[in-house]
Image (tube, rainbow, N blue to C red; front, side):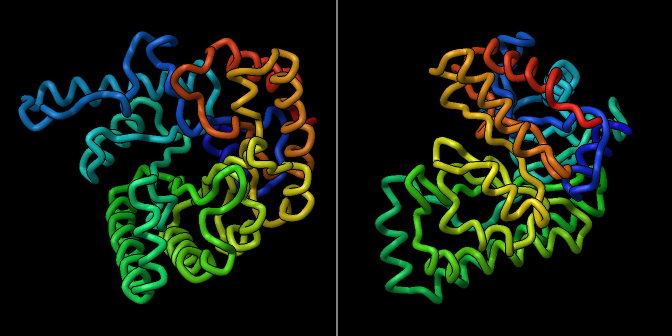
Length: 317
């Protein structure tokens, strides 16, 4: 089976033999690993002043870095970050990677249209809106979903993309930014509608949110994503408990503690990787990953350390 096929099998919670699929939502250490700036970190302020030949060089370099990352670190999927982030550049990047790799990798991009935690300058105003103009907030939520599904329909017609990572963050380490009741009113119905729309178009969905999701996890699972990411241990999410309660309904991705990968000991990092594998693997429906991403500033050797554990111990018989 190709890595893409194995990734899909895990998303569908089908049994696998061999190594557990692996990917990272983002691998930002491309300068250290490959000598190139990650696509998300490039300044495209002058993109529209470039000649088309210059733009094509940028596109091909971005595709090169995505493919090199997947090949070196044995990722089954590539999460694309088109830059500039337009539908046309998404299609071009998908085409370049498919041109060079065929159907080897599962390709996905960001596709969340639901409200996430507002930044500190806007969170109070957002909360006032929930109380003062709830119908206007709901109308906005619906419009965002409608627009996302319209864009997805055009991407489906073009072909090449397999799915979406829904990257609206809902939770702090202490819990969700809205109470479960408010989440059920202003976010969950639109998340469910969005996921159902993507499914009807033939796309897979991975719902990402950091932090303590346990007060709203029933609502997240009920929305029907193929997978949940990142199962954040820094937010108190225990993959063993999530697997016991929801492993027959949703694929699980993540749980290797990013905080420990940055500041812990090697032994703590190894044990975190082992814990995730030990409790995520049984019965299938698990994809090995950190609890966030391989972010700027993380020691590359720590990522390589968890990959060593995965290669030795992340194998189905």
